[in-house]
Image 1 (spheres, rainbow, N blue to C red):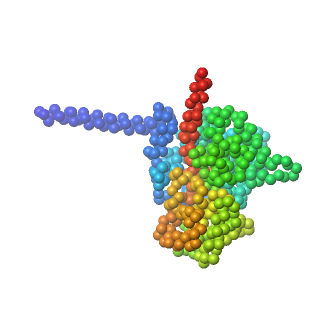
Image 2 (cartoon, helix red, strand yellow; image 1 turned 60 degrees about the vertical axis):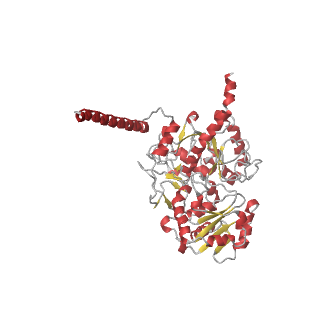
Image 3 (cartoon, one colour; image 1 turned 30 degrees about the vertical axis):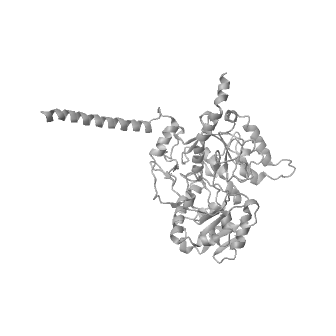
Amino acid sequence: MLEKGLFPLRFLFYIITISMFLLILSSVFLLQFGNTSLIPRSVFKLILLNGSSVYLPNLKSEQIKLPFLSSESSQVDAQIPLRNGQSSCQKSSSGKKMCASWQQNLKSCDTNEALLRVYMYDLPSEFHFGLLGWKGKANQMWPDVNDPSRIPLYPGGLNLQHSMEYWLTLDLLSSNTPNVVRPCSAIRVKNSSQADIIFVPFFSSLSYNRHSKLRGKEKVSVNKMLQNKLVQFLITQDEWKRFGGKDHLIVAHHPNSMLDARGELGSAMFVLADFGRYPTEIANLEKDIIAPYRHVVRTIPSADSAPFDKRPILVYFQGAIYRKDGGAIRQELYYLLKDEKDVHFAFGTIQGNGVNQAGQGMTSSKFCLNIAGDTPSSNRLFDAIVSHCVPVIISDEIELPFEDVIDYTEFCIFVRASDAVEKGYLLQLLRGIKREKWTKKWEKLKEIVRHFQYQYPSLPCDAVDMIWEAVARKVSPVRFRIHRENRYRRSEQIK
């Protein structure tokens, strides 16, 4: 009798348990796929980013021809764009996620699901593509990014190393172009009140490189004139006045770009190469982004990368030797290393065949020196990375791109300047690194190369994608500061 009485109770318990499980499961699906939710958008993104990402450590790379424009002069060893249902997310050694792979479908970008919503000013072409000689039709503000033949090319040579303003602008323009397949980390919105960040499309590095000198009867250079016009434009905009420019993003990667305007626009978020020529009250890690240089040597495909025993040169450096400020160390190292048999330490420029020679030298070397110059950083680090030559960083004040999610010690060696100039120290250190340890860094280099590639359209986890994600990580702290500063201002307005 007792057993017969227990059977219905057990059956009822099983039914209740299964029903609760199905209810919870259906709720999860509704939260993930529903267009509306009671959960705030930022929290919902965080759930997806940390809960539904997949790490693909064995994703093979193969040589492909990018569909439109590439930062390479030929084919590059690029990651194949991930498509439906695939994830490009990686977990850094610090445990943080990078590469926003919660966006599961690269064929369509939903404004409500983008990691970063960006409002871009429709500045006249003289601030951006007009500097490249582009002239649109009547009332045409931007080139047609859907047609690669109509996209102006960025100048070559050393101009390219600071070209991220160009790649970011193209990426935003393409975010509203259905036929362009790209990641959806950032998407352009037409209403500034919906934006997380306000983007200023001024090609400041190109303006400095090409238009900072007086020409003809000019009394003011084009570069200076454009900066003055930009300041006058921005400070009159409601978007700038709203938060004093704190939610604005300005690319000023060349160390001498924005020299005239940076003081007045210093409240904005800058995309920079380093902080070498900025006072801390204008530029600092709390609000600004360090972006990688665009390398000038070609990327070596992983399959063609020479291993330890096929790199006869131990240490490689080629570039300007006599520099000022922190770069004086180059001269000291030159006299210490120039006569060593397995060291290449020579003066070099991009003139003639200089870029190709540097690329060949790096791919034949185990270690490539990245020494402080006039500023703490240079594109030499990124040339070494794409050559799979283990970088040796001798620059005490250097700031590195995406260092909150990338551990550079996994593929670089850091040496203090004071140690590097001690006779015998540097070579003893590098000669003591055996094949196994070097190979581990070499393999890591081949894995992380894609984070430092600029191309159009952008690819998951490339430099453009990583920059947008770095900006997104700054948005919350910026909003926090804005809201704290506005506490009593709002109270006063109520009175």
